[in-house]
Length: 470
Image (cartoon, rainbow, N blue to C red; front, top):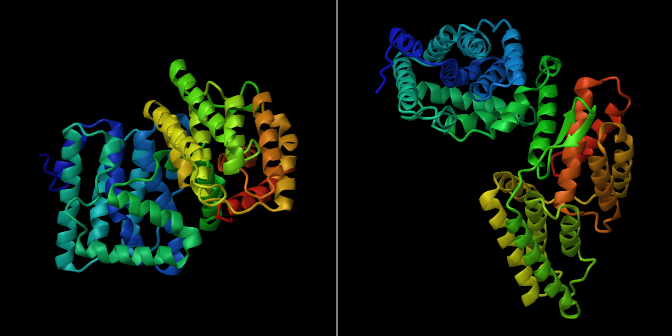
């Protein structure tokens, strides 16, 4: 077991580690200092807490992802240092964050990681009385030793973040500070709700999806500099994109100067063909009983199945998502809109079985279906919103390639033509995802574009459709 009992032993171990380990170690040590922010007065809290939380989140992402964009974001976070305020506990927390930021972006990662560790211990000390100080310091060294030992035992860094931040439990002094920090977050949940959830996930060893954390880390500097409220709004938008990623993502192609669709993984042809034929047979059987079960070609589930088979006959991931959508709709409607009739139950079961079969061999399909299942049932769409949605494909025609433009137009028509105001959830999620993605891109690249204001107003309503108004 690696024993870290003081600065010297920590430095000796860190010198033997690659940069990404140093960054991860720094990020976790800095997180142990975060509760000290709770001692800031209300006036100082907002700016310092935002800078500190940004630095820690970006450090964690930088330890696992080494793209040019993430490296640039880490560098920007480091350059965003502010005077921390006179409060000693706040200063220690901010110092640990600064060290973690330097670890994420500078060549002297070792020195930065070491500084982060000991600034974190200082913050824990500043939060409590002498006996609690010693307990907090001892617990912090023990937690650092645990992390180092896990690394030496070959634990991957992603799995290290899946370990509780305090393996032996939260020290008393830090626990008191943490309660204060949580109360401060709870004072303004619209602004700090994400950060409260993020912190809890890191402490418990159940980190938020790293792709969402990466999206937050990549928020442009000018938004971070605009303050906590603007950052919170941007996080809601980016979280909406993450939540609704149930179909191929919209990706900007620099050569075409248009958005295209990311490629889906190819599945064995025989698997896709078997699944598709199985559902087509089950659908025919259910439709054949139409007089007794009320199920017909214009039933929403039948339309979902027909449309996806026509549009994506060989795309296992998309078949899985829309079959799952139809399955959930049948689950809700059998016994209500439809009688509990054998052919409909068989169709529902066949859809579920097909989804499971695809998801067993396709991780992309599995993640997309999980997101679809997690989405709230959307609020009914008003006639005014439906008309706005119909304007989108033409308004964005210069930014979308032929395939994407065609699908967006079809989705907009489906949204507008649904008499109940509740189009298929997968269609609405896909439309929400693409419109929000393109709007964020436009805002980052072409702020003077006349469409930006209109699109952001639409995105606010898209959020409301999913029960998350801006």
